[in-house]
Image 1 (cartoon, rainbow, N blue to C red):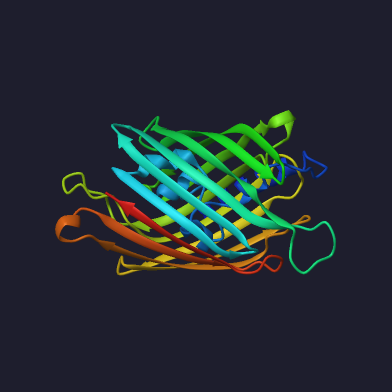
Image 2: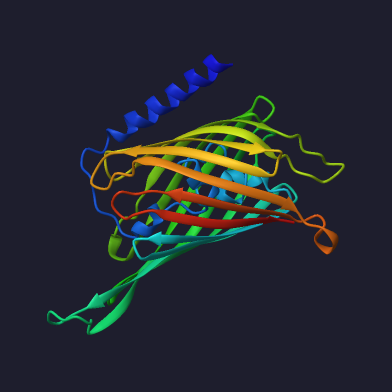
Length: 317
């Protein structure tokens, strides 16, 4: 089994890395906030999640993974201490028979100062940033293969200039070996802003191996992760440098999780280094019986913009 996983991983990484060589020159894109991953749990594993894709966080990276949603899932994340940038994400998904639909929000905002002449206090301030609001659909085309898409409306404000646009994400997940081994691929931000300004379009491929509890239709309970190892490759369609991500997660007594990851990339703004995270999940009691709560924290160090502290929750009901 170890040889099979290693061989498939090397093939996947080699194929996607070859694709990166098609684009010889790095380019400039709009709506750069779309490069910030949503959620906290994936961030603790270096951002690798396309192949695992097994909770509501997948709405931000691979919409095909939403087919794992058992009934309803809701998440919200706040990113603190990120170069004075306020970064949030919200996601919701709901099952309707075999189909799962979802809605998401991802935004980043900051305040800049205006000065006409050198002075201690600014003459004025202005908020800049942007957000993307999305609607997602996921459907299992077979017991082991799911596909999904997200359609996004995008708004960007840079000082006095506002830009609007739209984009689509496409994804697929293949799970095998009794749902222990998973492969995922997603094309993200396929669209443009006003006047043809390009978005940070990219293709992400991933592989994951996990150990989990079995799901039960009789007791209406989904499976729970116990251990997972993941690896992703993120290849920009504009630019020549891919980002590699690896990570692992281990749950202790199904209550507390420890996560670690590593990211490596090249280019003008490399994102290299270790990430760590923790998670806590509990079942509701009394009137909240049947509701599951999960709290996730991730520390994402960055030599250029400082440490980012991501705090998120997930509610399943």
